[in-house]
Length: 256
Image (cartoon, rainbow, N blue to C red; front, top):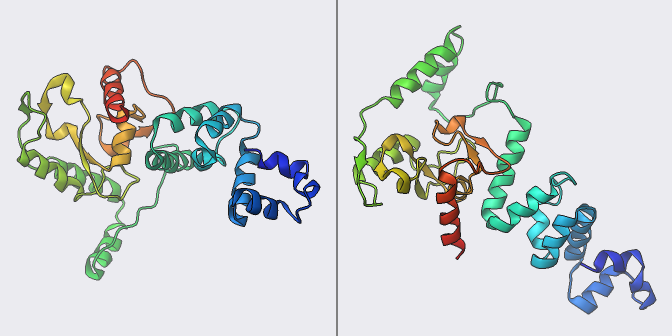
């Protein structure tokens, strides 16, 4: 934390070192790269008191992921996120934050890349030329969504029935359902919290990676009970939602 001031006042020169790098190496065991990172991060947060406070309490490494994207207006937001998120969840939130910042509207045109066999790829290219291509594609996907599925199960047991798990996992082939994520799904997440309705409904259970599961329980996903492609990232949780109290308890359990 003191390194930028040491560099600014050239204390290293007064102590007869050849550079700030030699000073930091001999007095603190810091290599050249670490010195540069430290100076760079401090330069980004020097006018953001909320992040400076986090850096004092947790070290510069804690604020490093947000140093470049934080502004004076959003510094408090990022400081709060650092306090409640693991490093991995924070990095995922930042990636989604940047993505939605670039592409804020669901109705905007977006490129999608898929891998197909050569024969199917040629057929798909020809199909794309149809004037009603998007209408037909959407109709097909809606029909897939209505395939036979297990009935909802009302129970006091938090364990999801195997048939429902298999059905839910098949929908994403074991991949996190968040539209911008390709990580393996690790958690079967109840979009309507199980503790509120004691039901395992295949339409309300979504496979997620750990980071996106954390973001859901931090209340930072809007439209959570809609299809994942309709989800939107939130800056702050909706404290009026009945799920908020449950999510607070989940976070307290995880961190306690």
